[in-house]
Length: 257
Image (tube, rainbow, N blue to C red; front, top):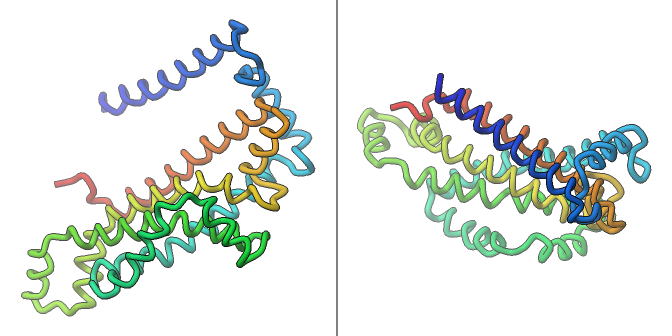
């Protein structure tokens, strides 16, 4: 209990230290508001955008638009990348087919193939969802493959000795053993998708947190930019906490001998 409490205080202290440093830097007047806006101006921008909106949309609408894109793409990743990753880890032929494709596009910057997606799918929501989906697919796929490949062969052989079928081995041995890696991939994918959100909202978007930050930067509205980045950071932490909460409930044996 003491360890948890002390770590929590360290976390709070870090946040407070950052805020104090931010206040101190802006109070000195060494930096203009365009470079580093004061906490007060960022807070005032938050109040203004919450009350009056930004470019025809309320703050909740901007947030809701981004979350809708993110969640839809993320759910598509979960229902496709997890089974394909598990299959590739379990079957070398499936891995030989899928792995080269994933490894080819995985290191590419999102903007490099976003233009191709726009040409193929247009500038509406489909290209944005496809970009977020591709960004999140590879981390989950790779984590699932790695989770299956690192399973101790003795567990599989033991199940075979007891007469378990291939289906039973998969669902009762391989899948539970790979869950830790699966959730690591899911958390990584969520972060990658969120960082790609700005790129996804660069083309033909009129709402969304990423679009709000980009549009505000074009007009040197640093206060709005900082506000948008802070909101994205907070929502990103909350989303990651939700995934970790599910992981604790599903993989309840994690960290226990």
